[in-house]
Each structure stands twice: as structure tokens, then as C-alpha cells.
Amino acid sequence: MTTPRLDAHAESLLRELAPQVLGSTIRRFKDFAASEDAVQEALAAASAQWPKEGLPENPRGWLIQVATRRMTDVMRSEIARREREDANARTKADPWSKFRAEGTTERDDTLVLLFMCCHPALTASSAIALTLRAVGGLTTSEIANAFLVPESTMAQRISRAKQTVKASRDPFRMPTKREHAQRLSSVLHTLYLVFNEGYTSSAGAALHRVELSSEAIRLMRAIYRRLPHDPEVAGLLALMLLTDARRPARCGPDGELIPLDKQDRQLWNREAIVEGVGLLSRTLSKGAVGPYQLQAAIAAVHDEAATPDDTDWPQILALYTLLERMSENPMVSLNRAIAVAMVQGPAAGLELLDHLESDARITGHYRVDAVRAHLLEKAGDHQAAIAHYTKAAGKTTSIPERDYLLSQATRVK
Amino acid sequence: MKYMLMMNAPRGTGDYGVMKWPAEDLQAHIKFMKRFTKTLADAGELVAAEGLAPPAQARLVRAQSSGAPSVTDGPFAEAKEFLAGYWIVDVDSPARAYEIAAGASAAPGKGGAPLNMPIEVREVMSAPPVEV
Image (cartoon, rainbow over the protein chains, first blue to last red):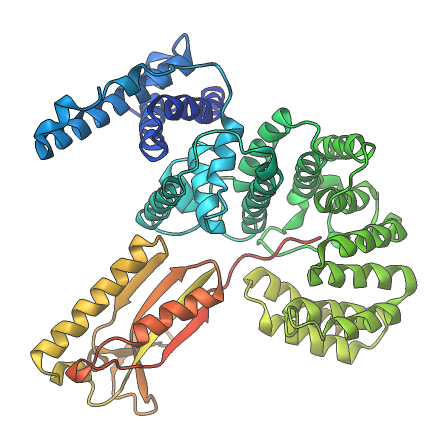
């Protein structure tokens, strides 16, 4: 007999409810770290019981009840411990008052939790791990698998992150107006990293990994539902959809990378493209353009071209020029050099590269060599192109990327 | 990003030099290594860590034309150093990997003074970057 598993509907319901149940538990018990553990146990209990007993009538209430019971146990043993340590404990304030305070409200706490988990005191990897567990409802073992580290390591990372948040003494509430923009930008950056991790790991032998890109998109949708008027929220969701749309065409049967201009565009996910473009045009019409919207707009121009030759490169160049002014990221300048080459010819692109190479943040980066090789090939200088493809291949730390660059070098020969 | 931190021992006689240290120095060294690895685990940075058996027990294996293994003993005269142990860590920056490596490098040696041994730091190959 096989153990019954949650069906897809119950699974997604559980993940959707996880942050709400956690929010309600934290508000009641005022202890983020312990509540988070209690909710994980409630989720595990649901995964074990629901397939056998069917969905409870009120799944949210069921989860809150199990988490509360767990928290009550924790508090009881905590109180017992204190009583042993301090005989006067009984005369102090009623420890049970916490249990009676407030009670559950129907408010949705997903956003507050995201703001907590993407706390400025956390490193990116800690914020990612905590977000996936507390807001995404993933188990430690699933997160550990996704990042290819042992479960105990991930457990430590999460527990440390919770301690850091606790030590910051930030209350469980929406950030103030003053903090809001900065916190939201950390949340978006964290989800952007989760998406990239999932998107890039889809090449190679990583099929057993939790779908991190889908998870990032799911969480991004949750934010968008709550902040539909924030242009960068819509922009990042659009960027994810427009990038993810190309995923089916991005790798060959053996996991080898297929560059944009060689991809079978029939494989692109039309539905995701339509949704992303729709989101983007609604948000762009509101003014206030940010970097995520610009990147989404660039992805949209690629996605909307029926063939590589139909790509509107002048449009892409204009978008990169705007993005470069906004982001001061040398990688953006590098991509802009490609757009310049596509519009004005390879010589103009190569000239830009010469300037770029003096930027210390990018000196010696394999991408500079890869782009130079590409532009040299376009300019017809095959010997130099081969040399730079090979040089780039020797510097990248990505195996699929290295294989791709080496195959480029061989192709030019 | 993941890094492998490699600790090399001089080839010597085929056994590790630490075996000839006074017992208390060896104990201090082992204790340090255990604590060091535990700190990495507690920080949520440790992916793997192993110490390897002494080089005298190393075997060199090649496939014969039949595909069957041909196994020979050392000595591997050409090798000056042998891998003695390694850590694989998952960290946010190269700087953090170097910091960890420096920690390992300062493991106590004979007489308790830091060894300041060289630790080879190598990035583990990763997935490709996002195309734009």
C-alpha cells in the first residue's frame, strides 16, 4: 500500500494558507520563531491526515487549531521550565494572558510576513531560505534539495535567520511608510533571486528540485494581488512571466543551452507571454518606470518577435539606455553593447566594450569575453572570435555555459 | 555560491606529520578542526567536510583494456603534496569563503602555534546565468 498524498488542489491550498496561519499564530503568541515551527508542524500534520480523512470543512481553522495546540504545548513546557528555575514565577503576571489576547482575525498576513523574512539584517541566502519556509510553506528538506545543501545546514540557516529577525525586535506589523519602499525592494530582490536560481538550475540534472521559479511566480502573484498599483511589483511579475515563458525552449535534450536566437519559438509559452505583456502595458501606462519594468519590457520585445530577425533592436537599445541610466550595473552596459552592435553594427559595440573593460567591477569577467567573441564573429574576425570564446569558456563557473562557449568556438572554426 | 576548501599535507613518508606530534598538540588540532566544522554547520554554511586517510593507503586505479580496474600502490613520486581533507561551503560571497579558509589555515600545529597552512579555494561549477 502506498501512503496517500495530497492532491494538487489541497497542496496549493495548503501553501496559500501557510502564511495566513502563521500570521494569525504570531499575532496571538508574539513569537515569530516558535510560531513558525508550530505552523510547519501543522502543515506536516495536514499533509499526513488530509489525504486519508479528506479536506476539513474549514482548512484554515483546522491549521490554526493544530498550530495553536502545538504552541500551547511549547508555552506550557516553557512555563514549567521557568517555574522550576524561579519559585516566584506564579506570583508574577498571568502567563496565560498571552493566550487570551486578540485571537484570530481574518486579516491576511502574507505581506507582513514577506517584509519580516526579507529583513535588512539578513544575508540574501538567509532571507531566501526563511521566505520559502515561512511564506512559501516549503519544508526545510525541500528547500535544502532546491539549493543542493544538506538538510541540517538548511535547518541551521533558517533557525539562525529566525533568531536574527527576533533579535532585531521588529514587531509583527506592516513597515511604516518610511520603511516601506526599502523593505518592498528587499522583498522583490529576494524573489528575483529565487526565480533566477530556479530558472538557471532548470538546465542540467536538477529535475528533482522544487520548482523555485514557479514558487517565485506564485509568491509574486500573491504580492501583486495585495499591491496591484505598485509599478515595480507588476514589473517584476511581468519579468518573471516573460522570462519563464521561454524556459521550454531554453535547453536541448541533453541540458545544453540554446541561445535566444536559436530557440524554437513555437515552444514558448504563449499564455505566459500574453499575461506578462498585458501586465506590463497596464503598468507602463501609469508612468513611474523602474528597473524591473524595463527588464520586463526588454523581455517582451524578444518574446513578441516571431523570428530573431523580427526583433525590434532599436527599441531594445532604447530600453537598455534607460535601464543603464537607472541601475549603474556594468552587466546592463554589457547587454546594451550587444544592442548597440545589433543596431549600429559590431564595430560600435566593440568600441563600447573597450570602455567597459576598464570598469573594475567587470574586468576579467567571462561575459565580457563572451560578448566580445560574439561581436568579433559578427564583424567577421573569426580567429579573434575563437580566441575570446575559448577564453570565456575557461573563466565561467557554469558547466552548461562553458559547453556552449566551447561549441561556439568550434562552430566558428 | 559553493566553494571547496582543500587542505594539503606534504607527502613525506606516506603518513601524516601530525601523527608524530606530541599527543596534546594532536588533540588540540583535532579539537580545533571539530569545532571549526561545527561552527560552519551552525552557521548554515557547511555542505560537506571530510578528512582523508593517509597517502600510504592511496591506490592508483586505471582501466585496463577490458575495462577492469588495474590497481597499483604508491609511491606517487611526482606528487609533493596530498589532499588531506576538504570542506565544501555554501556562502554569499567569495570574501566569506576566503575568511573561512583563513580560519582553517590558522589551525594549531606542533606546540600550539597556528600552522598558517595554505588552503586551496576552488569555486564549484554552477548552473548557467540568466540570459537577458
